[in-house]
Image (cartoon, rainbow, N blue to C red):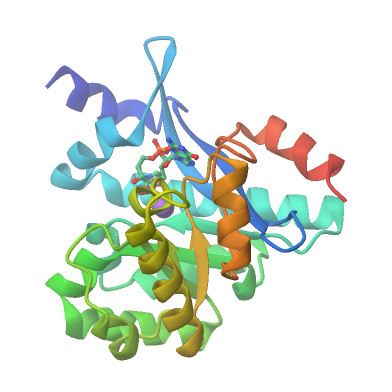
Length: 253
Ligand code: G
Ligand code: G
Ligand code: MN
Ligand code: NA
């Protein structure tokens, strides 16, 4: 309850902030974009979204917080694109409740117009559970987003009750292979087989693949060998505050 009280005032007190984790092109090791990850400056530390997103989701506070994260990360990304001349793209997590808002695509349109970010430089990350709970509305929302030129990725793929049929039934552009699979490559044969099959299948459906939670060179080498398009994980960088991400972007090739 104490947390709820302070979460209600977090936005107006400028306590909500966004960190960025690079996504790297596996074949070239160059940064293609980043995932925006919300943080809450609280009691002198940084609260992790795992601790407050569920509460925000239950109370509806996720709607204004999500709107802030979307606008802030689009604004920041467009600034970096102009300042660096690099064609980077930002991926923003959208919670189930946010995704179900009727005017979600309209909000996205407004944020793109306001920040000047081209639609193709925005990706929205959703989870399978959203599609499961609300297939009809989800399809319409995803189609609206695609018509706008915004791409969509399926986060934590394989962690839940994944159904391959989603990939055929919904307009999804990218799969993010859950860290729990990535953790077990290249040492466990079954994980290797699964990840390889996911990548092949996705490519067959014209879907790109990101591996999440990559921490070692051995994982990277395996994922490169099986042609995983993009890598995200501590091996390259943890999520960084904007100043540090900017430095990383400038030092890259
Ligand atoms: O950095 P990590 O602790 O950042 O994130 C933990 C979880 O919180 C992840 O599952 C991530 O998808 C989720 N998350 C991070 N940022 C956001 C956000 O802005 N909105 C929503 N809905 N979830 C987020
Ligand atoms: O659910 P989602 O995929 O959005 O969650 C991303 C979460 O994973 C964030 O909490 C982020 O900080 C964390 N993360 C990103 N890369 C790594 C990694 O290489 N190792 C670990 N342990 N966590 C990671
Ligand atoms: Mn995510
Ligand atoms: Na994710």
